[in-house]
Image 1 (cartoon, one colour):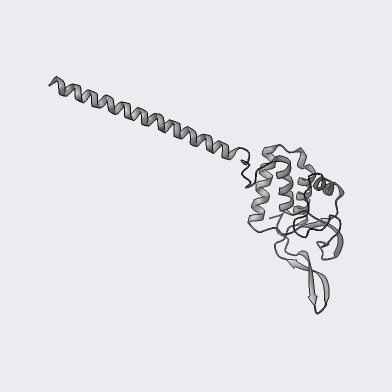
Image 2 (cartoon, one colour):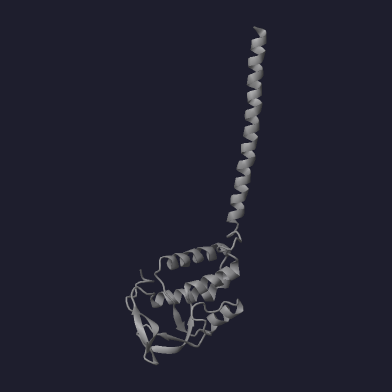
Length: 185
């Protein structure tokens, strides 16, 4: 709740009236807090230091936030370090497709600024995927999960084959013993 309980999160909105466009900040209920924006910046700046298991946990957490619809496009003041990391891994802004440092955004108090950059969950997850090859839906195995499933399936098949062979041979033995007992009579 401390990450996502900002009742008055402002987002930049362009309103068209007749032939003119007016930019203004409109509130979004249950938006991310400054703490959540700080968390995303922290993840970006430390993305290269995580091990794969930690990166996968962070990835799942951010995906959960996104699936629950409790975050929106987050634009922060331009951060040179975060921008450099995104440039290094060729992760561009996903929503507005504007260059980092040129996006118009609203502060947490509703003031309009024009030096912003996008740090959405989608962009941070793309960064983690690029660094750690987490295999998000691309058939890449998601850290070996599908390969593990295939191996388990193959083991089941081979054990089923062995047991069916055992079943056949034990049936033959049973039949033989029955046939032998009939002959003896």
